[in-house]
Length: 207
Image (cartoon, rainbow, N blue to C red; front, side, top):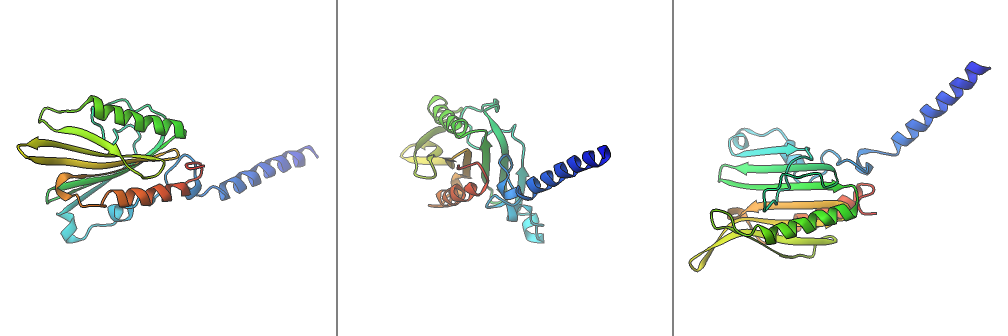
C-alpha cells in the first residue's frame, strides 16, 4: 500500500499545480506584463510593410535595468523595487521619437517613491549643457501624475525638446513621451488615462 500512498500524494500535488496554473493566466499574473498588453505593442511587433521598413523603427525591451524614459539627472540606479518593465520606443524618419513604458513595482509605496524621486530630479537637475530645462506640474491621471516638459527659452520663443506624462496607478508607473516636434494636445494624456484603467487587469496591481 505504501507505493499507492506515495502516488496519491504526487497525483494530488500535480492536480493542485495544474489548478493553480489554470487560474493564473498571463493577464492575471502579479509579477509580469502580459504579451501584447501595451497600447502600441501590436503595431510595434507586427511585420513592417515595405514603406514602414524605411520610415519607422520600433523597439520592444523588457529589461528592468534600463532608465525610465523620463530621467532628468541621467540616473543609473535602478534597484527601486521593480518587478517587471516593458518599454516600447519609436523613431521615425521625420525625424521624431516617442515611447511607451510600463513599470511594475513590488508595492504601491515603491511605485509612489519612484514618482517622488522623478519629481525631485526635475527640481534638482534643472538645466543641461544646451540650456534646456525640465519642469513639471500636477496632472489628474490614475492615483498621481505629473506633466513634464524639457524646453528652453530663446528670445521670446520657447523651444521644446520633449514632453512626457508620468502616472502612477497602484503598483504601476506609466510613462508616455514624445519629442517636441510631434506633440499634439491629448496625444499623451489620452493613452496614459487608458493605460491607468487597463493596468488594473493585472492581478495585484490596483488591489
